[in-house]
Length: 243
Image 1 (cartoon, one colour):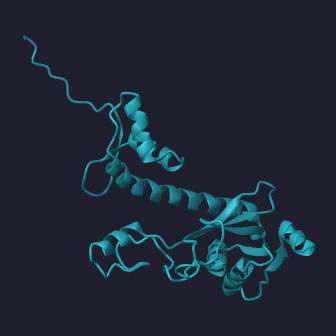
Image 2 (image 1 turned 135 degrees about the horizontal axis):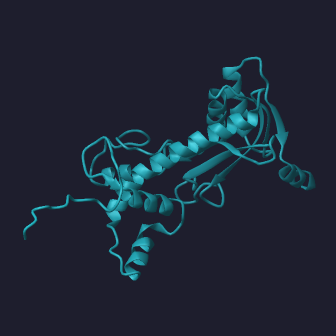
Image 3 (image 1 turned 135 degrees about the vertical axis):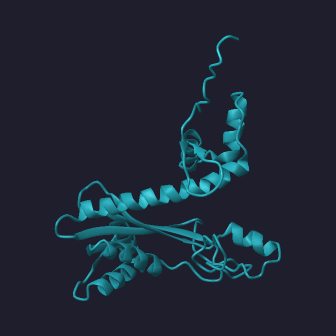
């Protein structure tokens, strides 16, 4: 009662300042969101886990909003890391040998018997270097037909929200009526490699794939005199010969 000293307020956690308006996010919340994004547990099961531990779970909508910022940062860090691995594997000659393959979100790339449209809606193509023996992923490209925001806007009557790129925040890069093209995936990967001033000496793909043609086209656009050699994958080559 005789002392008028009052201690100032101190936060018990660190925050990440953001340039825009709104409340800054705590470091622990961002770290938790990044960990959930890198695992298969999901936000719903995470809230159940925290509630079982008698901890106040965060709102699911708030975690989804924060995940947009976290996913963009993770994508940027992954892109920077693959570019570093590309330069490290290419060496002083700036020439690299890569192996490519594409994976779809379905068991096959056939068309639906009901609609006649392709069943696959997403594909991921990875390029792996074959020079250092460490099999670094040096480039990646994803084709996506799905856009939840566009579907929500269209369900509310907004016919101008067409995809891909027809509205703000569109994440689809392939029209839903088009087929996923391995040639376009290879072309984008080759463009990424050529953008780092690196050429492709050999490209190993499936026998029935057009990935190598896309890579060769983009590399030749950057360097007219360079020729990309196509090699056949041993597994698919042996299966073809057995047939």
